[in-house]
Length: 451
Image: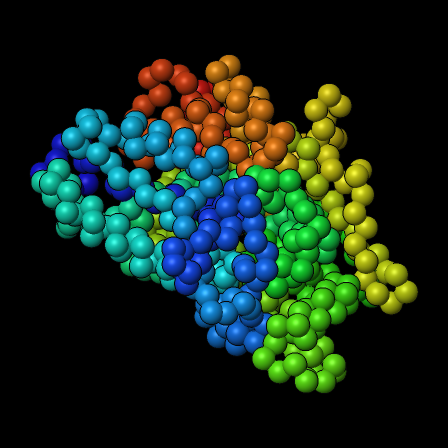
C-alpha cells in the first residue's frame, strides 16, 4: 500500500500474448512491410538463418532471418484475441476517464528463445513503470516510490512471465499475475506442429507448409510436454520429448536441407551439414528443457509473490489431445497420432478420469503449474461464455477455445476484481475447482460465485 492513498490506484497492466500472436514487420523496406499477420503469413521471410541460429541458440541470443538484408521486429498483437481484453481492462480498471489505468500490450518475437523474450520483457516492465510515474494521478498517488506492474499471460505468454520471474524476479517489480490457458508443462500439439506442421496452436487453421518453418523455430520447442500422464514410449526409447533420440530422424534431414539451401557455405559436405543440423536440433531441445526446469523451480517468495498473487485460469471441457504414443518403426521412433487420443468431446459421456480434458490445445495435465498449489487453480469451460457472447462462441470454430479464451467477458470481470481487490458484489464472476478438488477444498486467490 502506497502511503498517502486510502485506496491505491491499480498498477499498470502488461498483456503478454501466446505464440504466433504478434504481427511481425520487416523494417528494412521503405515503407516497412508486415510479413506475419492474422490473415497472411510469409514463411520465407520469417524463416531464421541456420548459421546464425546455431550460434544464437548456443549463446541464448536473438537470431536473425535467412533472407537478408532484413530487420524483422514485433508489431501489434492479434486483435481478434486480445483487443477486447485490453479495452475492457482499460475501461473497467479506471474509475474516471481522466485517471486512466494503463494497459500495455507486449508484442514480442515469438520465434526467439524465451530467454531473449524474457530479457525484453524485463526492460519493458521497467519502461512501463517509468511511463506510469509520469502520469499526474499516479505521481500524486506515490507510484514512483513503489513502481510495480501486474502481468497477464495467455498461452506461451504465461511461460514467458514465469521464466521472467525466475530470471528477474529479484527486482520485485510485479505485484500480481494472471495466466490464461498456459502450457506450464507443455502440450502434445507442439509435437504435432514440429512433426507434421499441422496443430491446434493458433487462431487460424493450420497448414502443412509450416512444417519446415516450425522445425527451425526455437520458441516452439519450449511448448514440448514434460508431464508423464498420457505419454507412452516403446521400450528402448528415451522417455523425454526433450531428448533428440525420441524424435524421427527426418527432422534432422529437414534442418540439414535447410542448411544446404540457406547456409553461408553452399559447398559444405553432406555429413557436416547433417552434424550441424543434429546439433541445432539438440541445442533447441536443451534450451527448452532448461527453461522448463527453471519454471518448475520458480520460487514465488524470491519474486515477492505468494500463491494468492497468482490467478491461474485453466480451460477444460473442450476436445483435447491428452495421449501420445511413441512406437518403433524398425529402430526409428515414430509418433502414433490417433483421433481417439483427443478426449472430452461434446455430446459424449465424460471420460472416466476427469483430468483427461483440456482447452482444445493444452491438456489439463500440461496446464498445471508446479509452483502453485493445485487447489488454487480456476477452471473455466466453453459454457462460461454468456448469452451475448455468441460471436465469441462462433470464433471457437476457428481459433478453438484455447485461442479465444481471453475474450470471455466473465474472465474480464474476474481479472478486474483480482487486480483492483474488489468484492464479488454482483455475483457475476465464477469458476470451477480443478478435478479431484471439492468446493470446500478449493482455494482460489479471490472469492468466486458458483457457476
